[in-house]
Image (cartoon, rainbow, N blue to C red; front, top):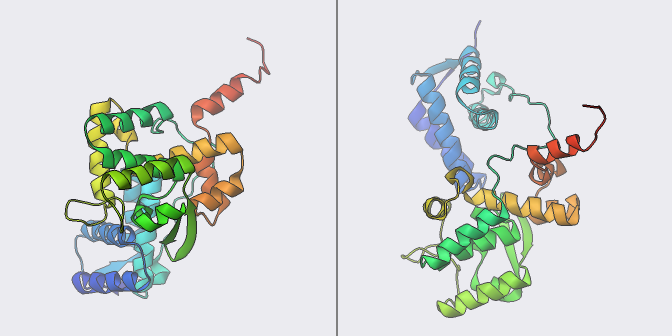
Length: 284
């Protein structure tokens, strides 16, 4: 007999949201999981029951309509929901992809483009977003960790970060520290978060993302390359090229797995191609 799971979408999603918050999931994670579950609900046409065959058809649909990474993240969200609903046997496996030691360079932000963005922000009278971009790019932090940059932390040169249930210390390079202290002095910031909205709340991902996209058009940089997390990628690639130290990079980025760090540190496809061409193993 085919197993069915009955779902009260409104009530069960509300309970799932409460569960995620009890687990101290990040706000961005909670929002994404709920958004992904709603996508599945739409796919299932809002039926009050689902079967394993529905999950398998959904996986096929994701593969046809989303990138592998996006599809897998949506499968993870659905699997978590199924576990919460005590329907773990209906879970599906993520899409397997052969591991590669390089990344496509099409969406990678380079140093020159980063500097153009910062310059555009400063010359157009937007010092805050300029300082935000420099802070992320010089430390490799996640945009969600920016709120931990408080006035007192900057003075000590070390920021204590709590993220996803983990505690770590982010060191501030001296050049960045001097810039941040000058920024604080100029704008009279003596306590609390350095980067705030007009209402005094700490800047969040959506504020920063929107401002960076605006700068992209003005600075003549491909908007597809311009988003906060790409600054973290630029930091990681640059750090690894200079130091070749994957362990230190993993510590700085707050990764528990070197495999995750390896993805950040990989050279682009163009660099791998250049290496291949230098081999000169065949005539022609």
